[in-house]
Each structure stands twice: as structure tokens, then as C-alpha cells.
Image (cartoon, rainbow, N blue to C red; front, side, top):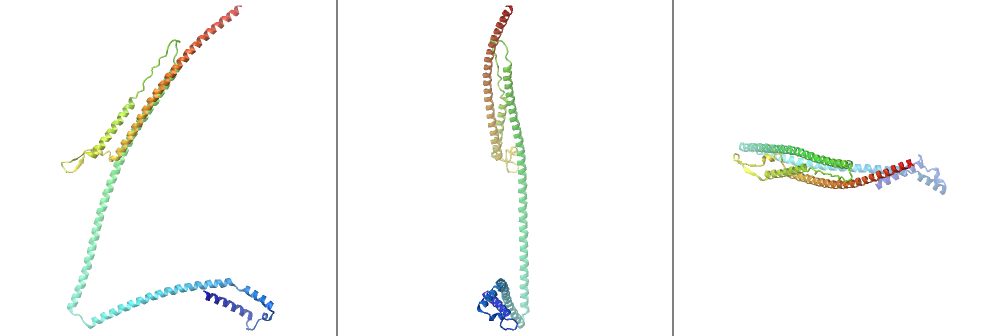
Length: 350
């Protein structure tokens, strides 16, 4: 790279010198000038040198040098490979020539040729046997793969059947849950009806009592009907017990069969609906939770009924007191009106 740069600079200096000297090769006119003027001319000539183009030429030369170097290296590699290949061919040729000379010098007898033919035949038989063995191995592998595929298909069918059974059980459980929710909604509506009846009784009590001052109002509260709630509670208890019994029977009771000698479950009929014991346990837990919530709701409703009854009784007592006070005020107003009328009549007579 340094040599290329020096050569490019040298070429530029030579071209500049040739231009200054002219075509005749004689000295230029500016050479005989004074030193000061010749120094200024040299400075101007130095400014005219194109270092950018020189740098570009240097880069171009470097790129060409690298390209030539890579080409030469690849050619050298190919030459080395060709030399090695030629050596291999020469060795093979020498070996073949030696074999040809041996064959030409000593003619083998018929027995030797027969043995060689037998050896060749044996080698062909070995190849055929090897190919047959490979074919048998391939056929055996394909048969094994077919068996595995058949087993996988059976497993997939069983999984599909189990999935359908689980879906059916989920649908059955969804129906049962819907029925339970309907019963809960019915209980809620019944509680709302009780509240409305209580409110209507309070309104009737506030507007209904009329009579004499000494007459006392007697209010009879009807006890709330808790029969439906108790029935639902008993139904949930029976349902939980039946589910627990089915789980126990399907998991524990197993007896031998007399005909086939295989083991069969006693709870096979009941376990056909509930395939998974874990799901049954979860269902039982959820039903027990719902039962506990319903029990809490019934207790809350009973407390609300008692509280409303007590509040209603207090309200009735207050109304009775207000009624007595109203009656006394009415009597006082009537007496005052009588006095006013008598006074008016007396004033009219005067």
C-alpha cells in the first residue's frame, strides 16, 4: 500500500514536471525569475496537486490487490486439489498396471477361475441375503408401526367415549343445578310474598282499627310457613347421601363373575351416569355448600320475620296510644264546640 501511494505521488510529480517543461524539454520561462516570485509560483503549483484523486487511486489499487490476492488463493487451492487428485490417479494407474502385468504374466488355471467365479457368486448371494434381511426388517418395522397406530386409534376412541360420557354427566348435573336454582328462586319469591303479606297487614292495621275508646285492638300474627324450606333441606340431604352411597359402591364393591371369570363392579349401573369419582365429590361439596347457604337464608328469613313481627307489634302499640290520645282530643274539641255554641246562643238572645 505504501509503494502504491509513493508510485502515485511520483507519477503526479512527473506529470506536473512535464507540463512545466513543455514539449521541447527545455526549461520554462518562470525558472529564471527572482526567488520570491519563484516561491509564490511553487506554492500555487502545490495547491494544484489533486490529493483526493490520489487517495481514490490508492483505494482502487488496494481493492484490486485484495481481489487479485483472493483469486490467487482460490487458484492455489484448486491447484493443490488437482495435484492430489493426479497423484491418486497415478497411484491407481500404477496399481492397475501392476495387476494387468500379473494377469498377463501368469495365466490362471480353470480351477482358480472357478473359485473366483464362486467367490463372486458368494458375494452376490451375500448381497441378496443382506437386502432380503433389510426388507424383512423394514416389513417388521412397518407391522410394528401399524400395531402402534391401531393401539393409538383404540385409545383415541376410548378417550372420545369418556369425553362424551363426561359431557352427558355435565348435562345431567346442569339440569339438576337448574332445578335447584329454580327451587331457590321459588323460595325467594315465597319470601317476597311473605314480606308483602306482612306489609299489607301493617297497612291494614294502620288504617283499619275503629271503635270506642275503651275497645282494644287485637292483632293475630300468622306464623310463616317454613315447610317448603324444610322439604328442600331434606331433599338436599337425601341427594348428598345418595351421591355418597353411589361413589362408595362404584369404588369399593367388586365381585367375580361366574361365566367369564372376570371382575365386575356391583355399582356398574349407577357408575355409568357418574364416570369420575372426583367430579362426584366436587358436586357433593357444591350441593352441600348450596344447602348450607339455603339454611343460612332460611335462618335469616326467620330472623327477619321475627324482627318484623316485633316491629309491627311496637307500631300497633304506638298506634293504639295515638288513637286513645286522638279520641280524648276529639272529646275535648266536642266539649269546646258545645261551650262555644251555648255562648253564641246566649249572645244572640241578648
